[in-house]
Length: 293
Image (cartoon, rainbow, N blue to C red; front, top):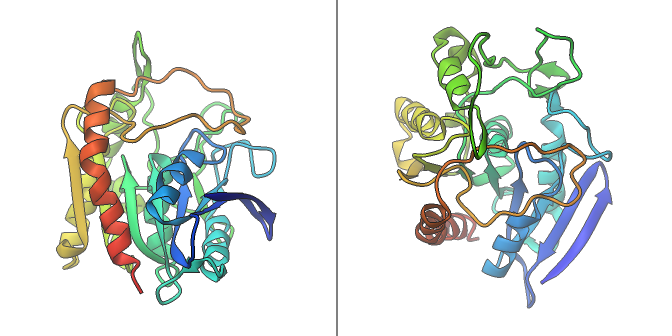
């Protein structure tokens, strides 16, 4: 495996290519609210024969330090760069995407926004709606969207007032806040991601003991929306009742500048590992089959 640091044309990240003759199917990888460069995805996908761009889009001095009003064009630029690489197979100009948590929300949103650039998508513990940003520099009571398109903030679901997160010995859980936010039907209607506009098939992976947010419920929303638009055959949902939020081997990015605080991820190491072992072949098969020339 060869890994190259990329700092060009507005792109920050690491690009990994397998040993041997290419070209290889391309995957753009997005982390979540951890920030930094998601090298954990690069280390998973390159040994499976994929050329992977682990894209940095927030959480560093080279991008931005707040998770709010992040331009979708930042991801669009990465997709176009990856599709042009001689090491990459881009079927009809499209490459695959994988994201986790808020990065899975972003992957689904980008696939719906730039369907000519994105093929298959794998979304780990995703959201089917756009959520508010996380910007602790704002005055109390002020919120912003997580994402913008052509400079305009996208509609979003707010964290409701008066609903605190829960705490355990493992850390903070935003699950009750998320659940109540999803009960705001008007906000959800405005902020729902139009996943039916995505070109490629979608694979969702969630855990039933996710304490970070309601990934299983939100995956169901994605499945339902695809069905409503006649695309049931283009989405699958792998759900593991005893698993938590981290459904693949994970190491916090070394380059993230945002301080971490303990989160209750739910699940157990055994349940999470079992879920990964069962899901991984399907994840690889989903991407490999859909990116064949």
